[in-house]
Amino acid sequence: MEAWLYETLQNQRVRCRLCSHMCVIGNGKRGICGVRENRDGVLETRVYGRLIAAGDDPIEKKPLFHLMPGSRSFSIATVGCNFKCRFCQNADIAQMPADRDGMVAGDAATPQQVVAAAQGRNCASIAYTYTEPTVFFEFACDTAQLAHSQGIKNVFVTNGFMSAEALERISPWLDAANVDLKAFTDDFYKRQCGARLEPVKETLRRLKTLKVWVEVTTLIIPGLNDNPRELSQLAAFIATDLGPETPWHVSRFHPTYQLTDRGATPVETLMQARKIGIAAGLKYVYTGNIPGQGGEDTLCPGCGKTVIARRGFQIMDNRVRNGRCSGCQTVIAGIGM
Image (cartoon, rainbow, N blue to C red; front, side, top):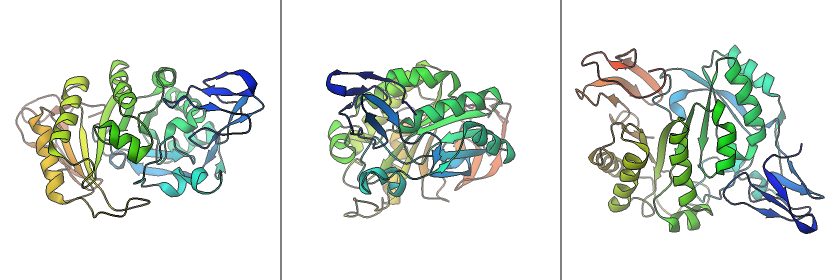
Protein backbone atom coordinates (compact mmCIF):
# COMPACT_ATOMS: atom_id res chain seq x y z
CA MET A 1 0.00 0.00 0.00
CA GLU A 2 1.04 3.63 -0.38
CA ALA A 3 3.13 4.80 2.55
CA TRP A 4 2.34 7.79 4.71
CA LEU A 5 4.56 10.76 5.43
CA TYR A 6 6.56 11.39 2.28
CA GLU A 7 6.89 14.03 -0.41
CA THR A 8 7.56 13.78 -4.14
CA LEU A 9 10.69 15.29 -5.66
CA GLN A 10 12.00 15.72 -9.19
CA ASN A 11 12.89 12.77 -11.42
CA GLN A 12 10.51 10.40 -9.62
CA ARG A 13 12.46 10.66 -6.38
CA VAL A 14 10.72 10.89 -3.01
CA ARG A 15 11.71 12.06 0.45
CA CYS A 16 10.46 9.84 3.29
CA ARG A 17 9.51 11.87 6.36
CA LEU A 18 8.85 8.92 8.67
CA CYS A 19 12.10 9.02 10.62
CA SER A 20 15.03 11.33 11.17
CA HIS A 21 17.06 9.85 8.32
CA MET A 22 14.71 11.68 5.92
CA CYS A 23 15.81 9.32 3.14
CA VAL A 24 15.73 10.60 -0.43
CA ILE A 25 14.83 7.50 -2.44
CA GLY A 26 15.27 7.07 -6.17
CA ASN A 27 12.82 5.21 -8.36
CA GLY A 28 13.02 1.47 -7.73
CA LYS A 29 15.05 1.92 -4.56
CA ARG A 30 14.31 1.51 -0.84
CA GLY A 31 15.11 3.60 2.20
CA ILE A 32 17.57 2.67 4.94
CA CYS A 33 14.87 0.62 6.68
CA GLY A 34 14.67 -1.72 3.68
CA VAL A 35 10.86 -1.86 3.69
CA ARG A 36 9.73 1.41 2.08
CA GLU A 37 10.14 1.38 -1.69
CA ASN A 38 9.79 4.01 -4.39
CA ARG A 39 7.70 2.68 -7.26
CA ASP A 40 7.46 5.22 -10.08
CA GLY A 41 7.44 8.16 -7.68
CA VAL A 42 5.02 6.60 -5.18
CA LEU A 43 6.46 5.47 -1.85
CA GLU A 44 5.03 2.12 -0.80
CA THR A 45 5.34 0.15 2.41
CA ARG A 46 6.24 -3.50 1.90
CA VAL A 47 5.26 -4.59 5.41
CA TYR A 48 1.68 -3.46 6.01
CA GLY A 49 -0.05 -6.43 7.65
CA ARG A 50 2.94 -8.76 7.21
CA LEU A 51 3.78 -9.89 10.72
CA ILE A 52 7.03 -11.76 11.28
CA ALA A 53 6.27 -12.21 15.00
CA ALA A 54 3.16 -12.21 17.18
CA GLY A 55 2.53 -13.49 20.70
CA ASP A 56 1.84 -12.42 24.25
CA ASP A 57 4.57 -11.46 26.72
CA PRO A 58 4.72 -10.15 30.26
CA ILE A 59 4.74 -6.36 30.08
CA GLU A 60 7.92 -6.55 32.18
CA LYS A 61 9.74 -8.11 29.19
CA LYS A 62 9.47 -4.92 27.11
CA PRO A 63 10.78 -3.78 29.67
CA LEU A 64 8.02 -1.63 31.14
CA PHE A 65 7.87 -1.90 34.94
CA HIS A 66 5.45 0.97 35.56
CA LEU A 67 2.64 0.13 33.14
CA MET A 68 0.06 -2.21 34.68
CA PRO A 69 2.62 -4.49 36.40
CA GLY A 70 1.94 -8.19 35.99
CA SER A 71 -0.25 -7.73 32.90
CA ARG A 72 0.24 -9.34 29.49
CA SER A 73 1.05 -7.49 26.29
CA PHE A 74 0.30 -8.82 22.80
CA SER A 75 3.52 -8.19 20.91
CA ILE A 76 3.86 -7.82 17.15
CA ALA A 77 6.58 -6.99 14.62
CA THR A 78 7.35 -6.89 10.93
CA VAL A 79 10.81 -7.19 9.42
CA GLY A 80 13.05 -4.15 8.98
CA CYS A 81 14.77 -1.45 10.98
CA ASN A 82 16.06 2.06 10.36
CA PHE A 83 19.16 1.38 12.52
CA LYS A 84 22.07 -0.90 11.67
CA CYS A 85 23.18 -1.78 15.20
CA ARG A 86 26.20 -4.07 15.22
CA PHE A 87 24.83 -5.58 18.45
CA CYS A 88 21.25 -6.12 17.22
CA GLN A 89 19.53 -8.70 19.41
CA ASN A 90 16.88 -9.53 16.80
CA ALA A 91 19.01 -9.29 13.67
CA ASP A 92 17.39 -12.29 12.00
CA ILE A 93 14.19 -10.28 11.55
CA ALA A 94 15.23 -6.65 12.04
CA GLN A 95 18.05 -6.84 9.51
CA MET A 96 16.43 -9.37 7.17
CA PRO A 97 15.98 -6.97 4.22
CA ALA A 98 19.55 -5.68 4.59
CA ASP A 99 21.22 -9.05 5.09
CA ARG A 100 19.12 -11.17 2.72
CA ASP A 101 18.93 -9.21 -0.52
CA GLY A 102 15.81 -7.25 0.31
CA MET A 103 13.81 -10.20 1.60
CA VAL A 104 10.51 -9.27 3.27
CA ALA A 105 8.79 -12.18 5.00
CA GLY A 106 5.72 -12.31 7.21
CA ASP A 107 2.23 -13.67 7.64
CA ALA A 108 -0.83 -11.71 6.61
CA ALA A 109 -2.77 -10.00 9.41
CA THR A 110 -5.24 -7.17 9.83
CA PRO A 111 -5.55 -4.67 12.69
CA GLN A 112 -8.85 -6.33 13.56
CA GLN A 113 -7.15 -9.71 13.89
CA VAL A 114 -4.40 -8.31 16.09
CA VAL A 115 -6.87 -6.63 18.43
CA ALA A 116 -9.02 -9.76 18.57
CA ALA A 117 -5.95 -11.85 19.41
CA ALA A 118 -5.01 -9.45 22.19
CA GLN A 119 -8.51 -9.66 23.61
CA GLY A 120 -8.57 -13.45 23.31
CA ARG A 121 -5.36 -13.73 25.32
CA ASN A 122 -6.50 -11.25 27.98
CA CYS A 123 -3.77 -8.80 27.09
CA ALA A 124 -4.10 -5.32 28.55
CA SER A 125 -1.89 -3.80 25.87
CA ILE A 126 -0.42 -4.26 22.42
CA ALA A 127 3.32 -3.80 22.09
CA TYR A 128 4.91 -2.85 18.78
CA THR A 129 8.31 -4.36 19.43
CA TYR A 130 11.12 -6.83 18.52
CA THR A 131 12.04 -4.71 15.48
CA GLU A 132 11.60 -0.94 15.12
CA PRO A 133 7.86 -0.10 15.11
CA THR A 134 8.47 3.10 13.15
CA VAL A 135 9.10 1.04 10.00
CA PHE A 136 5.64 -0.52 10.16
CA PHE A 137 4.08 2.78 11.18
CA GLU A 138 0.94 2.62 9.05
CA PHE A 139 -0.06 -0.78 10.41
CA ALA A 140 0.87 0.27 13.96
CA CYS A 141 -1.29 3.39 13.69
CA ASP A 142 -4.32 1.56 12.34
CA THR A 143 -4.00 -1.14 14.98
CA ALA A 144 -3.39 1.32 17.82
CA GLN A 145 -6.44 3.39 16.95
CA LEU A 146 -8.65 0.31 16.93
CA ALA A 147 -7.10 -1.03 20.14
CA HIS A 148 -7.63 2.30 21.86
CA SER A 149 -11.32 2.20 21.00
CA GLN A 150 -11.52 -1.21 22.69
CA GLY A 151 -9.81 -0.07 25.89
CA ILE A 152 -6.47 -1.74 25.06
CA LYS A 153 -3.34 0.30 25.65
CA ASN A 154 -0.58 0.72 23.09
CA VAL A 155 3.17 0.52 23.64
CA PHE A 156 6.13 1.33 21.39
CA VAL A 157 9.48 -0.33 22.10
CA THR A 158 11.60 1.92 19.94
CA ASN A 159 14.97 3.41 19.11
CA GLY A 160 13.33 6.83 19.22
CA PHE A 161 14.42 7.93 15.73
CA MET A 162 10.93 8.65 14.38
CA SER A 163 10.19 12.11 13.03
CA ALA A 164 8.24 14.67 15.03
CA GLU A 165 5.48 14.40 12.41
CA ALA A 166 5.20 10.64 12.91
CA LEU A 167 5.14 10.92 16.68
CA GLU A 168 2.49 13.61 16.63
CA ARG A 169 0.35 11.45 14.37
CA ILE A 170 0.33 8.35 16.58
CA SER A 171 0.42 10.12 19.95
CA PRO A 172 -3.39 10.20 20.52
CA TRP A 173 -3.35 6.38 20.79
CA LEU A 174 0.12 5.81 22.24
CA ASP A 175 0.07 5.20 25.99
CA ALA A 176 3.67 4.27 26.73
CA ALA A 177 7.08 3.85 25.14
CA ASN A 178 10.30 2.20 26.13
CA VAL A 179 13.03 4.07 24.28
CA ASP A 180 16.52 2.69 23.80
CA LEU A 181 18.94 5.47 24.68
CA LYS A 182 21.84 3.40 23.45
CA ALA A 183 24.66 5.70 24.57
CA PHE A 184 25.28 9.38 25.16
CA THR A 185 27.77 10.20 22.40
CA ASP A 186 27.10 10.90 18.76
CA ASP A 187 30.20 8.89 17.88
CA PHE A 188 28.65 5.72 19.33
CA TYR A 189 25.43 6.26 17.38
CA LYS A 190 27.30 6.85 14.12
CA ARG A 191 29.75 3.97 14.45
CA GLN A 192 27.58 1.34 16.11
CA CYS A 193 24.06 2.15 14.83
CA GLY A 194 24.35 4.22 11.68
CA ALA A 195 22.34 7.00 13.29
CA ARG A 196 22.62 10.13 15.47
CA LEU A 197 22.02 10.88 19.13
CA GLU A 198 20.24 14.25 19.07
CA PRO A 199 17.02 13.09 17.30
CA VAL A 200 16.60 10.41 19.97
CA LYS A 201 16.92 12.99 22.74
CA GLU A 202 14.36 15.17 20.96
CA THR A 203 11.93 12.25 20.67
CA LEU A 204 12.25 11.55 24.39
CA ARG A 205 11.52 15.17 25.25
CA ARG A 206 8.57 15.23 22.84
CA LEU A 207 7.10 12.02 24.28
CA LYS A 208 7.05 13.63 27.72
CA THR A 209 5.44 16.76 26.30
CA LEU A 210 2.77 14.60 24.66
CA LYS A 211 2.05 12.90 28.02
CA VAL A 212 3.18 9.46 26.86
CA TRP A 213 4.57 7.35 29.72
CA VAL A 214 8.29 6.84 29.08
CA GLU A 215 10.82 4.31 30.32
CA VAL A 216 14.41 4.31 29.06
CA THR A 217 16.70 1.34 28.40
CA THR A 218 20.48 1.40 27.94
CA LEU A 219 22.31 -1.77 26.95
CA ILE A 220 25.68 -1.43 28.66
CA ILE A 221 28.43 -2.66 26.32
CA PRO A 222 31.93 -3.14 27.74
CA GLY A 223 34.39 -0.63 26.33
CA LEU A 224 31.83 1.22 24.21
CA ASN A 225 29.32 3.02 26.43
CA ASP A 226 30.21 1.98 30.00
CA ASN A 227 32.37 4.96 30.94
CA PRO A 228 31.10 6.25 34.31
CA ARG A 229 31.30 9.86 33.15
CA GLU A 230 29.17 9.14 30.08
CA LEU A 231 26.66 7.19 32.16
CA SER A 232 26.47 10.09 34.61
CA GLN A 233 25.71 12.49 31.75
CA LEU A 234 23.06 10.13 30.40
CA ALA A 235 21.41 9.72 33.80
CA ALA A 236 21.48 13.49 34.35
CA PHE A 237 19.72 14.00 31.00
CA ILE A 238 16.94 11.61 32.03
CA ALA A 239 16.53 13.26 35.42
CA THR A 240 16.61 16.82 34.11
CA ASP A 241 14.92 16.64 30.72
CA LEU A 242 12.48 13.78 31.31
CA GLY A 243 11.99 13.90 35.07
CA PRO A 244 13.31 11.92 38.04
CA GLU A 245 10.25 9.65 37.99
CA THR A 246 11.34 8.24 34.60
CA PRO A 247 12.49 4.62 35.02
CA TRP A 248 15.94 3.76 33.67
CA HIS A 249 16.75 0.14 32.78
CA VAL A 250 20.47 -0.67 32.50
CA SER A 251 20.76 -4.00 30.76
CA ARG A 252 23.47 -6.62 30.31
CA PHE A 253 25.07 -7.06 26.90
CA HIS A 254 25.80 -10.51 25.47
CA PRO A 255 27.99 -10.91 22.35
CA THR A 256 25.78 -11.16 19.27
CA TYR A 257 25.42 -10.41 15.55
CA GLN A 258 28.44 -8.34 14.41
CA LEU A 259 29.71 -7.45 17.88
CA THR A 260 31.40 -10.56 19.24
CA ASP A 261 34.82 -9.17 20.12
CA ARG A 262 33.98 -8.57 23.78
CA GLY A 263 32.39 -10.48 26.62
CA ALA A 264 29.15 -10.04 28.50
CA THR A 265 28.79 -7.00 30.72
CA PRO A 266 30.17 -7.64 34.22
CA VAL A 267 27.51 -7.60 36.92
CA GLU A 268 29.55 -5.02 38.82
CA THR A 269 29.32 -2.61 35.86
CA LEU A 270 25.52 -2.79 35.92
CA MET A 271 25.44 -2.28 39.66
CA GLN A 272 27.68 0.76 39.27
CA ALA A 273 25.41 2.15 36.55
CA ARG A 274 22.44 1.71 38.87
CA LYS A 275 24.23 3.66 41.60
CA ILE A 276 25.04 6.38 39.08
CA GLY A 277 21.37 6.68 38.15
CA ILE A 278 20.28 6.90 41.77
CA ALA A 279 22.98 9.49 42.48
CA ALA A 280 21.63 11.56 39.57
CA GLY A 281 18.27 11.70 41.35
CA LEU A 282 16.39 9.00 39.43
CA LYS A 283 13.74 7.34 41.59
CA TYR A 284 13.53 4.05 39.70
CA VAL A 285 16.67 2.42 38.28
CA TYR A 286 16.64 -1.24 37.25
CA THR A 287 19.19 -3.80 36.13
CA GLY A 288 18.25 -6.14 33.29
CA ASN A 289 19.40 -9.58 32.15
CA ILE A 290 20.80 -10.44 35.58
CA PRO A 291 17.80 -11.90 37.45
CA GLY A 292 18.00 -12.42 41.17
CA GLN A 293 20.49 -9.63 41.86
CA GLY A 294 17.94 -7.31 43.48
CA GLY A 295 18.07 -4.62 40.81
CA GLU A 296 14.67 -5.57 39.40
CA ASP A 297 12.66 -4.49 42.45
CA THR A 298 10.70 -1.26 42.64
CA LEU A 299 11.62 0.68 45.75
CA CYS A 300 9.37 3.32 47.25
CA PRO A 301 11.05 6.72 46.79
CA GLY A 302 9.50 7.78 50.09
CA CYS A 303 10.34 5.10 52.62
CA GLY A 304 12.80 3.05 50.58
CA LYS A 305 11.01 -0.24 51.09
CA THR A 306 10.41 -2.76 48.30
CA VAL A 307 6.92 -2.25 46.90
CA ILE A 308 7.23 -4.59 43.90
CA ALA A 309 9.56 -7.58 44.15
CA ARG A 310 10.52 -9.23 40.84
CA ARG A 311 12.62 -12.07 39.57
CA GLY A 312 13.14 -11.89 35.86
CA PHE A 313 9.77 -11.04 34.33
CA GLN A 314 7.78 -12.44 37.24
CA ILE A 315 6.31 -10.39 40.06
CA MET A 316 6.87 -12.10 43.39
CA ASP A 317 5.15 -9.51 45.59
CA ASN A 318 3.25 -6.28 44.92
CA ARG A 319 2.60 -3.86 47.76
CA VAL A 320 1.38 -0.96 45.66
CA ARG A 321 -2.22 -0.03 46.44
CA ASN A 322 -4.11 2.41 44.22
CA GLY A 323 -0.86 3.78 42.88
CA ARG A 324 0.70 4.33 46.30
CA CYS A 325 3.11 2.61 48.63
CA SER A 326 0.97 0.61 51.06
CA GLY A 327 3.33 1.64 53.85
CA CYS A 328 3.97 5.39 53.62
CA GLN A 329 1.41 6.28 50.91
CA THR A 330 4.01 7.81 48.58
CA VAL A 331 2.83 7.88 44.96
CA ILE A 332 4.51 5.27 42.74
CA ALA A 333 4.71 6.81 39.27
CA GLY A 334 3.25 5.01 36.29
CA ILE A 335 0.00 3.83 34.69
CA GLY A 336 -2.22 1.29 36.41
CA MET A 337 0.12 0.88 39.35
